[in-house]
Length: 296
Image 1 (cartoon, one colour):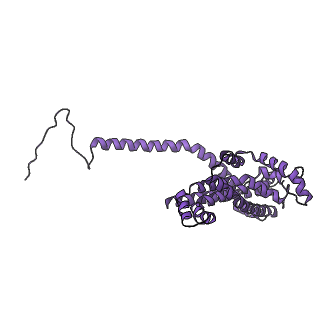
Image 2 (image 1 turned 60 degrees about the horizontal axis):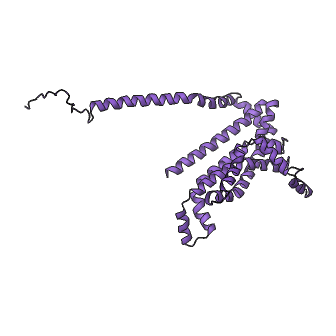
Image 3 (image 1 turned 45 degrees about the vertical axis):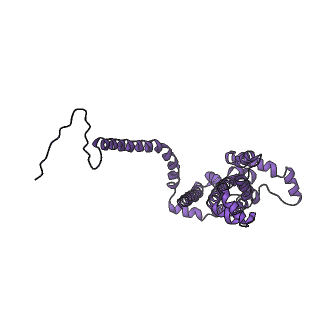
């Protein structure tokens, strides 16, 4: 039988005993830090709750205002259905114009550096921070009947202001920067070595753009397109000044909400819920797409 020998620890000598492979003092220190970390996380949540509640409360108020039956009845209203149809038709047309004419500009901003690069970039981003009413007034003065361009088009029998075309132009002006900015960032992220390698293999500029730049930038392009479409769907200020609020012709969902606030609040709530659900779904899809793309 093995005998046990006790060895006393001299004063000032550190104990060498280890528990579960760790020094007891180190173990206690880690437990203390874990408690501090947990309390820190809780304090961050407590500090974030007021702002989070501020975002949630209005959404909950909208969803709790009407019953599902009232919402279904509102969807049968011809004015509601017409506003939805006009919004979808104009926003998809606007998105096509944004992609068609915004992509070349985004490519220049993302892949080329010229003397007025910062000025052009700031000009493109200006509608994001510009008050929508100011944008609508600027469009009216630039393209209305009293402007040189408006008079020229009017002589040709073409009228832009207070028509469906004005709705599309207002949406393009307000929403295009979201697509152009995202696309420019995506184009700028393409490595020059890949482009140079493709050019050495005999690819021309269009082939490089189609088979190299576009596939690599597709997440940025899709995200920008969805953001631009969502922003166009919610456009109000520029549209009501440049296109007016004519039911069946220029009245989109945001303008129907504005009118319904005075006439039929249930219809306004129904359209508001549709916009909230569409916008939230679009944002969630973008974040999910970006997250999956970054994990590959």
